[in-house]
Image 1 (cartoon, one colour):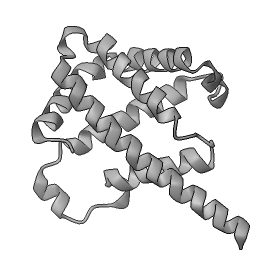
Image 2 (cartoon, one colour; image 1 turned 180 degrees about the vertical axis):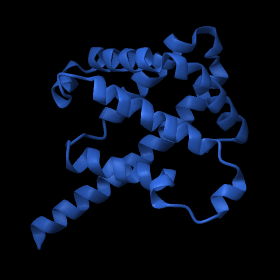
Image 3 (cartoon, one colour; image 1 turned 90 degrees about the vertical axis):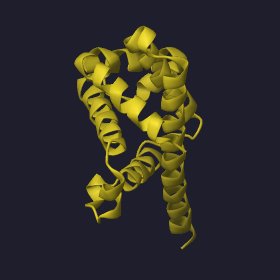
Image 4 (cartoon, helix red, strand yellow; image 1 turned 120 degrees about the horizontal axis):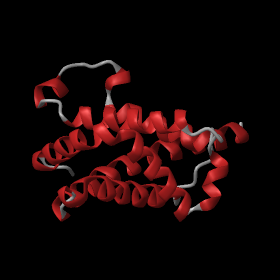
Length: 159
């Protein structure tokens, strides 16, 4: 689980990433493709849109961490609900792109490496732990979404 300190640290560090977001996205995909060259086939030749999607999603996630507790007690639009958005993203990755669960380890490694490169000395061991915990929560939620999509697909085949 993320602590309030984890959330504050992630939000603060993201503010340092925003000015270099385009470079960070390029570094992320470069590293991901170094770790798993076969993943290149899963993406379009022109990665500019994909890089924007990555930065937009990370910005959304970090913004969600910055909400006050009372904001979570109010009913919110499903499109602003972090858990629902991440579950849906996991469903899409599993059903449309056939992304296996193992890929989340490589994506996480590429993300942490990218943050380390982009933030330099500001990426302390504590900050790395905070980002790692956040990523593990996101990956677990996406895997749950992906499993639900696979179960639905299997049930559709049985029916």
